[in-house]
Length: 230
Ligand SMILES: C[S@@+](CC[C@H](N)C(=O)[O-])C[C@H]1O[C@@H](n2cnc3c(N)ncnc32)[C@H](O)[C@@H]1O
Image (cartoon, rainbow, N blue to C red; front, side, top):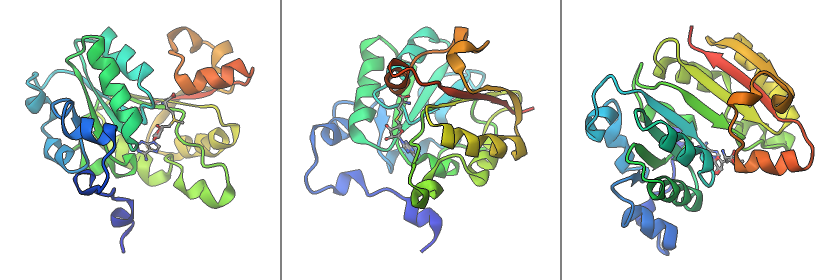
């Protein structure tokens, strides 16, 4: 079986016992959030299908969690589109619900594995990308599941427009120390990084996410890198 096939998700509509979040994805929120099958129709045509001009910036947040940043970002940038990806149903629905409650019409969510971004976007389709506290996979046997891999970075680079940025942050020192050399040898230019985001020049523009808050309250530093397609 190919790696791509292994990473494919089970089909939402085939779930024998759909919970309230699955039902919401297929029903109440189906105009704003897409399962792993419906989302494929948007590849290369997101702006057209959102009814906005081809010049409208379209940003991507990977792993939105319960969507505090997702909704904040969409609300504060009504002139841009925002697409969020989530694997899990509950945070997916929390994210789109939060954005809609804030009055946002520019946000969409999709259930998809971010490792397979090439299924969803074409070359030069994306503007800014946010990767906030990706799952750290701390056991050594699980490291291979980390999102930041050479192929992922090459794929993402191809899908972003020139001069666009990737904002990466994590609470895991181990993940950061593994990711930083990968960023440096990737096609991206590393504009800056810090091992203590909240005591750095990047603090002012930072939005504290739910996961970040957990680690901040414990007094732990947040690791950050800013990449650009230059
Ligand atoms: C640790 S949480 C962080 C959530 C949020 N960004 C924050 O900072 O509070 C990571 C989230 O990413 C999602 N996730 C993990 N791997 C993913 C993948 N390959 N594709 C899409 N979402 C993923 C998880 O379901 C989870 O909700």
